[in-house]
Length: 307
Ligand SMILES: Nc1nc2c(ncn2[C@@H]2O[C@H](COP(=O)(O)OP(=O)(O)OP(=O)(O)O)[C@@H](O)[C@H]2O)c(=O)[nH]1
Ligand SMILES: [Mg+2]
Image (tube, rainbow, N blue to C red; front, side, top):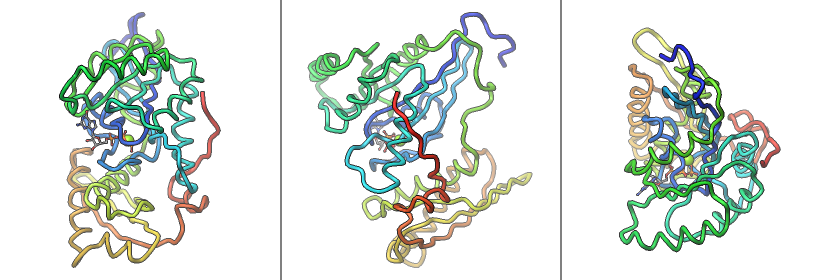
C-alpha cells in the first residue's frame, strides 16, 4: 500500500486509440495483468470506453480503451462508437496510437488525420510484430509513419506475447503529470461488475459464433446478486430477428449452453467467486439504429468531441 506519494510520483490519463482489431484491448489487458477488456478476432469488439487503472510505486496510469475508429459507419451504434473514441482524446495527457502490420489502411489514415489535430504527446505502438518474420520490413514502415506525424516515441510491440511492453510503459509514464494518484490504489476500472459481466457474455458470443454472429447483438445483465459464497447473475442477449435467436440458441440449446459455460468460467476468474449464470435470448426489432433503444441498453451519452 502506498502511504505517502513521493514528489516524483506521476499520474495521468492515457488514451489507447487505433482502428478496429489492431490489439488495443489485448494491450490494455497485458499491461494490467488480467482480462478486463474483452477481445476477439472480429473487428469492433470494444463498443464502450473503459478505464483500466494501473497503480505502481512510481506512477498511476489511467488507461482508456476505446472502440476502434472506423470510417464507413452506418447507424446509431456506429456513430456512438466513433464518438466514444474521439471524445477520449479531449482530456488525456498522452495518446498511444496502435497500428499493426506493415502497411497503413484507410482506417489508419483516418485515425492519423484526427491525431494531427491533437496537442498531446503521441506514442506509436506497432503491434503484432510476432507475426512479422523478416523484421527489416518494419523499417520503411517506421519511416513512413514518422514522416506523417511527430511521434514522441515509436515502439514495435507484441501485446499477445508481451514483448517490449515495459519499454512502452516507461515512455508513457514519462509523459504523465507530477501528481499523487488520482484514483484509490485498489480501483482498477470505472465500470460496474454488472457491465463487466455483460461484456464477458458478449465476448463469448463473438468468439463462439464468429461469422454467424449478427452484428446487432447486445447483452443486458438484469440481475447481479452477490451472496457470501456465490454471485447470481441473469442476462438477456438481445437480437433483432427471430432467426438470429435460433442461431444463438443452437441445436438443442447447445450453443447457448456453451456461451453460458464459458462466460461463467471467465466471471469466476474475474470475481474470484462461484457464479450462477442464467441467460435468455430475446428479440427487439431495429434496436441498433434506434437511439432510444440504444440508450436503454447502455449506449448513452452522445458526446461532442475531438482533442
Ligand atoms: N499475433 C498477434 N495477435 C494479436 C496481438 N495483439 C492482439 N492480437 C489479436 O488481434 C485480435 C484483435 O485484438 P483486440 O485486442 O480485440 O483488438 P482491438 O484493437 O481492441 O479491437 P476493437 O475492440 O475491435 O477495436 C485478437 O484476436 C487478438 O488475439 C499480437 O501482439 N500478436
Ligand atoms: Mg478492443
